[in-house]
Length: 127
Image (cartoon, rainbow, N blue to C red; front, side):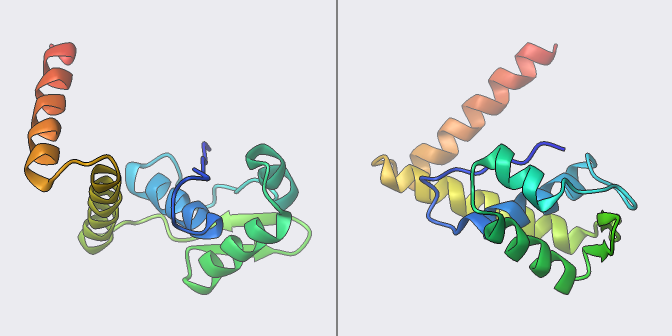
Protein backbone atom coordinates (compact mmCIF):
# COMPACT_ATOMS: atom_id res chain seq x y z
CA UNK A 1 0.00 0.00 0.00
CA UNK A 2 1.30 3.39 -0.93
CA UNK A 3 0.77 6.13 1.65
CA UNK A 4 2.27 9.54 1.12
CA UNK A 5 2.14 12.73 3.12
CA UNK A 6 2.92 16.29 2.13
CA UNK A 7 4.66 18.43 4.75
CA UNK A 8 3.41 21.59 3.00
CA UNK A 9 -0.22 20.44 3.30
CA UNK A 10 -1.95 22.39 6.06
CA UNK A 11 -3.69 19.24 7.34
CA UNK A 12 -1.99 17.47 10.24
CA UNK A 13 0.11 14.45 9.18
CA UNK A 14 -2.13 12.00 11.03
CA UNK A 15 -5.15 13.32 9.10
CA UNK A 16 -3.25 12.88 5.83
CA UNK A 17 -2.54 9.25 6.78
CA UNK A 18 -6.23 8.69 7.57
CA UNK A 19 -7.22 10.25 4.25
CA UNK A 20 -4.70 8.11 2.36
CA UNK A 21 -6.08 4.91 3.91
CA UNK A 22 -9.64 5.98 3.09
CA UNK A 23 -8.55 6.85 -0.48
CA UNK A 24 -7.03 3.40 -0.87
CA UNK A 25 -10.36 1.89 0.18
CA UNK A 26 -12.27 4.00 -2.33
CA UNK A 27 -9.98 3.20 -5.25
CA UNK A 28 -9.75 -0.45 -4.29
CA UNK A 29 -6.06 -0.79 -3.46
CA UNK A 30 -7.09 -1.85 0.05
CA UNK A 31 -9.78 -4.35 0.91
CA UNK A 32 -11.11 -6.24 3.93
CA UNK A 33 -8.54 -8.25 5.87
CA UNK A 34 -5.60 -6.45 4.26
CA UNK A 35 -2.90 -5.60 6.79
CA UNK A 36 -1.64 -2.06 7.22
CA UNK A 37 2.09 -1.49 7.69
CA UNK A 38 3.22 -1.61 11.30
CA UNK A 39 3.40 1.71 13.10
CA UNK A 40 7.20 1.66 13.11
CA UNK A 41 7.42 0.57 9.48
CA UNK A 42 5.09 3.31 8.23
CA UNK A 43 6.68 5.94 10.47
CA UNK A 44 10.08 5.01 9.03
CA UNK A 45 8.83 5.13 5.44
CA UNK A 46 7.14 8.50 5.93
CA UNK A 47 9.87 9.83 8.22
CA UNK A 48 7.39 10.87 10.87
CA UNK A 49 7.10 10.23 14.59
CA UNK A 50 5.58 6.79 15.37
CA UNK A 51 3.09 8.57 17.66
CA UNK A 52 1.67 10.30 14.58
CA UNK A 53 1.02 6.98 12.85
CA UNK A 54 -0.42 5.55 16.08
CA UNK A 55 -2.79 8.49 16.32
CA UNK A 56 -3.99 7.90 12.74
CA UNK A 57 -4.47 4.17 13.35
CA UNK A 58 -6.37 4.83 16.60
CA UNK A 59 -8.72 7.21 14.79
CA UNK A 60 -9.26 4.73 11.96
CA UNK A 61 -10.02 2.07 14.57
CA UNK A 62 -12.44 4.40 16.34
CA UNK A 63 -14.19 4.99 13.01
CA UNK A 64 -14.49 1.23 12.44
CA UNK A 65 -12.24 1.19 9.38
CA UNK A 66 -9.47 -0.96 10.89
CA UNK A 67 -8.98 -3.23 13.87
CA UNK A 68 -5.88 -3.91 15.90
CA UNK A 69 -5.21 -7.58 16.48
CA UNK A 70 -2.88 -8.01 19.42
CA UNK A 71 0.40 -9.53 18.32
CA UNK A 72 -0.66 -9.57 14.65
CA UNK A 73 -1.01 -5.97 13.54
CA UNK A 74 -3.63 -3.62 12.16
CA UNK A 75 -6.11 -4.90 9.58
CA UNK A 76 -8.78 -3.35 7.39
CA UNK A 77 -12.29 -4.35 8.45
CA UNK A 78 -14.38 -1.96 6.35
CA UNK A 79 -13.86 -2.74 2.70
CA UNK A 80 -17.14 -1.62 1.21
CA UNK A 81 -17.24 2.01 0.24
CA UNK A 82 -20.61 3.65 -0.27
CA UNK A 83 -21.54 6.63 -2.41
CA UNK A 84 -21.51 8.89 0.65
CA UNK A 85 -17.86 8.04 1.31
CA UNK A 86 -17.02 8.67 -2.36
CA UNK A 87 -18.69 12.09 -2.12
CA UNK A 88 -16.67 12.90 1.00
CA UNK A 89 -13.47 11.88 -0.78
CA UNK A 90 -14.39 13.99 -3.82
CA UNK A 91 -15.16 16.99 -1.62
CA UNK A 92 -11.84 16.62 0.21
CA UNK A 93 -9.93 16.42 -3.08
CA UNK A 94 -11.79 19.47 -4.38
CA UNK A 95 -11.07 21.47 -1.21
CA UNK A 96 -7.35 20.64 -1.39
CA UNK A 97 -7.25 21.60 -5.08
CA UNK A 98 -9.02 24.86 -4.35
CA UNK A 99 -6.66 25.72 -1.47
CA UNK A 100 -3.67 24.95 -3.67
CA UNK A 101 -5.09 27.02 -6.52
CA UNK A 102 -5.66 30.01 -4.22
CA UNK A 103 -2.12 29.67 -2.85
CA UNK A 104 -0.88 29.90 -6.43
CA UNK A 105 -3.04 32.89 -7.34
CA UNK A 106 -5.64 31.03 -9.41
CA UNK A 107 -9.38 31.56 -9.16
CA UNK A 108 -12.11 28.91 -9.37
CA UNK A 109 -12.75 29.43 -13.09
CA UNK A 110 -9.06 28.98 -13.92
CA UNK A 111 -8.96 25.81 -11.82
CA UNK A 112 -12.04 24.37 -13.52
CA UNK A 113 -10.60 25.22 -16.95
CA UNK A 114 -7.31 23.51 -16.01
CA UNK A 115 -9.17 20.42 -14.75
CA UNK A 116 -11.11 20.16 -18.00
CA UNK A 117 -7.91 20.55 -20.03
CA UNK A 118 -6.16 17.91 -17.94
CA UNK A 119 -9.12 15.56 -18.39
CA UNK A 120 -9.04 16.04 -22.15
CA UNK A 121 -5.29 15.45 -22.19
CA UNK A 122 -5.66 12.24 -20.18
CA UNK A 123 -8.42 11.03 -22.51
CA UNK A 124 -6.20 11.57 -25.54
CA UNK A 125 -3.32 9.68 -23.90
CA UNK A 126 -5.56 6.66 -23.21
CA UNK A 127 -6.87 6.54 -26.77
